[in-house]
Image: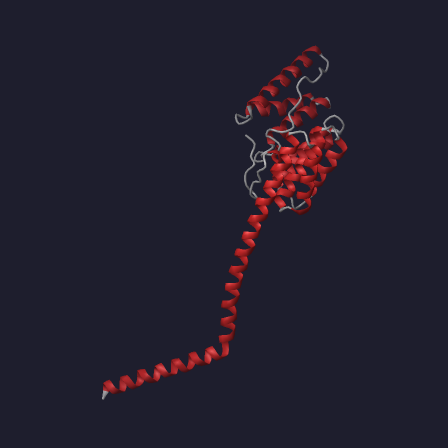
Length: 256
């Protein structure tokens, strides 16, 4: 009798499980189907979005390259029009690159007021990658080196001179030049010595730092200030807007 009893008990258990599953499905089945459908629709929608984003980036990349080519072949009006259209319609990375290149064009043409205003807008825009915002600050310092107060330049450049900032070498050189122009020889010497002591400083920049140290020493020996003989380059690297590449957020862009 024990075996039939066991079989009966198993059948009762199975029936109870089926009844519970049926009750669970009747209660929650609609929600389960809706959740499954949402997953399918979400995955499909993401794939569509991903595909459209890739297409938009490819189109923006082509238009950006055409704009750079127009600048290169001395067609500034066409280049400016192409880049201004990108600023209005392109994905965010190409918007930033286009704004930088337009500001750089004003800078190269001696339109200092327009260039400073454009770089200021970039530096203050929270949507701009910090690497590019710092680059904009660096270019403002270059443009205002002759006119801004030492305090203004120091406040602007000191954060860029931090050890892990990709623009630190150019920022340190500009800090040295600003201190020299302000008659702060000891502070200028510190910045130039820091560049020389750092083995990762680009060779050309280290050489200019040595020249400036020699100028400072000569001036001290003569007992009078000597004119600056070396001007810093705008940055340690090429204008990031000229190479047509957008680094990922929080990525590289490090100066050598």
